[in-house]
Amino acid sequence: MATSVKMDEETKSRLERLQAEIKLKTGKQVTQQAVLERLVERASESKAEFIDSFRDEFAPLSDEEIEAFHQGMIDSGEETDEDDIDDILYG
Image 1 (cartoon, rainbow, N blue to C red):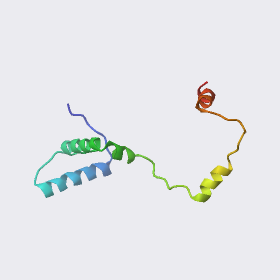
Image 2: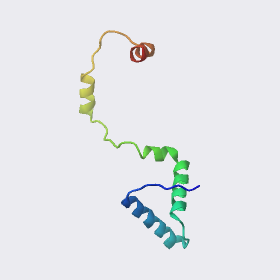
Image 3: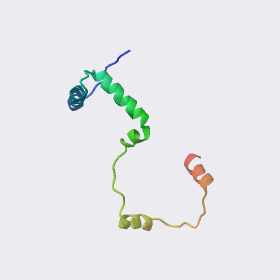
Image 4: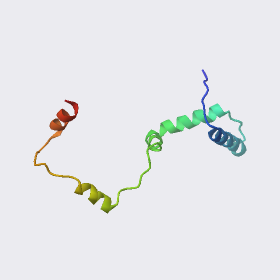
C-alpha cells in the first residue's frame, strides 16, 4: 500500500533531477517511488554510515581546550565506582 511523503520543494526538485538522470543514463523510466525505494534499500544496507550522516558535525577540541577542561576538574579525595555513580544518579 503506497502512502505519501511530505518534502520541501528543494528535496522534490532534487528527486526529480535524480529521476531524470536515471532515465538519461540508463534509458529506463523509473517512478519517484522506485527511486525512494532504492534509496531506502541502499541506506538499509549501510545503516551505520547512513545513521552517522545524521550526527552533528563538530571540530575536535584543541589541546588548549582540553587542558582548560581538565583544569576545571577537582579531586575530592573520595573514590567512586560505577555503583556509587548509579546510586547518585538513579537513587
